[in-house]
Amino acid sequence: MSLSFFEDGDDDQVLSAINTTPLVDVMLVLLIIFLITIPVVIRTVPVHLPQEASQPSQMPPHGITIAVDRDGHVFWNDTPLADDGALAERLAAAATLDPQPEIAIRGDRDGRFEPVGKVVSAAKRAGIAKLGFITEPPPHGG
Image 1 (spheres, rainbow, N blue to C red):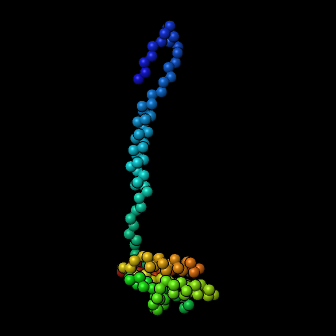
Image 2: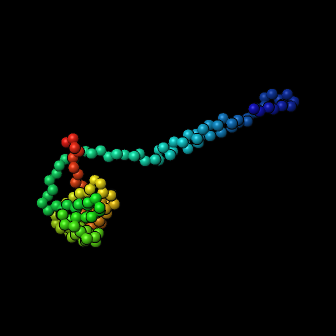
Image 3: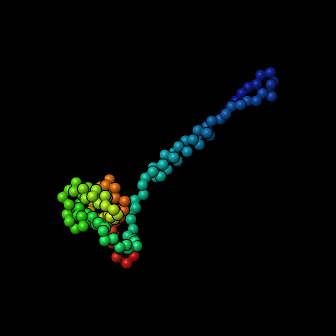
């Protein structure tokens, strides 16, 4: 609230004083709203992936199946591989073939993601163009 006293009877003078209290109140409310809503927007949503049936596809005869068991052991067409170096060598050799074979990865449902991720990463580094995953249809038949 602003009080002013005019001298000499000058009633025509305009008093221009801005009351900033409502502006500060609105800005404080907006700040509080943003502080509350930003963590909700940034937080990731926990997602339980559904089991869905995909279109069954026939593996070409020259395709390669890489299996990763529960313990993280890697198998190349049912042949166990000693280490990541052996996998990288076989993938590099497969990448040079013409036509390039399709690689299908079978990962154990109860296994960790890291060994499967290593296989995918090694395949991409080797230059494999066709990479897929083998899944089972849900129990209800899809």
